[in-house]
Length: 537
Image (cartoon, rainbow, N blue to C red):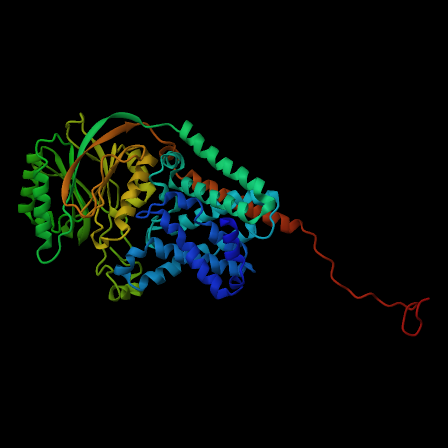
């Protein structure tokens, strides 16, 4: 019955209208948003693209398929990132429309592979080619200046253990390929009776791939435990909020005394002043470190002046010990477009008048850093790699930190502008993927929630700290040794997808070259034996 209903929707009389088809494309493209937090209907991802694919495959022309690919992409971006509306207002629609263009080539690709009655060979190729095309869209829009890799389809599987194991093999990219392959096979199963055997085989192959990863992918070798505390002050607003937030962080941190800690982590922008000009704050932080007998990782969002970096607003993480700053610092490298800088500000600076876009660009850091703690309860000096907010969305950054020796990944974030939306849950879920990809635990500490800790296989450690709480919590973070295939081989799934598309293009091009050219239609010549004056007998 469900199959008949879907087919009627995409082939009914209203779907002959381009306006109805356009509206249906926007809605169909928005459906996958339900697979992400906060709804977290992870299972829905494996069929969420089917209505969109059924619509696009029935497009009357390749141009129309491109339009419906674009409109579906617009719907996807708009609904996955709808929580940006209070900050960007109407500009979010413009951003979604521009980013949706990346799906315009994907529409004709789906139509060419799934349209009509595909042969067994074309149907088999579709289960590989269509996901590869989708992955190219994810890769292109993952550029920092376009919003980064937020809302990758594979990220919807952050709480599914077999999918996390697959991420350890090929990163979130490989999980995206799997999810789109299942959607492609289901589309064939519904729409093309002649291809149902091929579709069933495709689904079996996907299941075998996940089973093989679950069975054969190396598991992290557990090697002890670190005790890490997360301090989440909660919402502090109004006049004097910077000083009051510091005071609340300070009070919560004092409650951690006597708990044998290795590290205490504050959220992003927990300090709103240049520590170089506030010796009083430095003294208070050093006193806290002595009280809890552990180093503090704090984050400053302020104008910092120095001989090396010049003047500017930095997002800088400081490691503070009993005697004050240890000298370990990290400056945020990948900034949030419009939130922390405006791309091409001379042309797009008007965005500050319609939303909460950055009035001044933050200064960008130049290198990643692995920090080392003094010996503590976990033994020798723990090595950890800091990431700031938006950076936890980038698989390559956590991978590089682990290659440089990080035993724990630490993300400092602030989603205080997006309370009551899906953003805090979406952000926290990314830590599970980064942990699973690298085989290293990850601590995600925020100002206002959701704060969470995940083990080296992406499993949740302890209870997360929701947006309604102001507290400090201690987590026993399991450490691990070993190297995951993703850390060793990197983004091989992306390169494989590129290879598939190049191969498919060469095959199509070769077929066109081999196709015989029809002879031109030339009228028969008349002869002297067959003319109007002397017809032939």
